[in-house]
Image (cartoon, rainbow, N blue to C red; front, side, top):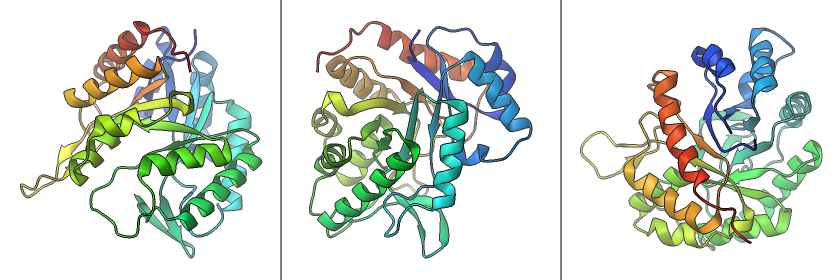
Length: 276
């Protein structure tokens, strides 16, 4: 069966992931955690890959930086992709490196024409090395930046047209950004062409400390009901897409995550593929 709904693979859940037999179940990993020559992590990943489809979701390419992707990082990513043959490779629309300094975050940038050219070039370089197209994920935003020349949806659509890449639509990121910056999440999602959306992410968020109205993309809580509502609206329009439940903090038991995964799987099963 093709991948339907999946989970991020966590070391504490390796045994349960290996034993799971749910239809359409798949697992995502951050490739940076597996860029090694050998060892137990790679053996476990191979065992899980032998049973389930796998995706690689990068956090280190820094596609929006003012420099090319690091060749050593790209080479290690290609080696991992060649070995484990993921059904998709994805990255974030953000930057995290500058002049050799690595920041432990996914940072925003002004959506200028120059940024569009630079990021399209970096996506092209990445795809040339990997020998495959990638998906690019929309960011979570917290404060307005000056200097934008393009709306985020137009920026993303232009990237797909220039490079042939697809989109990984993180519905929680859309909800968080819309709440923080004051626009309609529904309008944002409706603007994205169905044919470029290759995957969907669902995650939890929380309120900023101190009583402000700011929402933070924590990946440390269950998927909120408004995000489920947006997800249902999206798949009603575009049809089923592989969907991931993201949880990277305050990680519960495997069966708790599987309950959310099964909710997404059930929603996907009721939708016919969209005609795009």
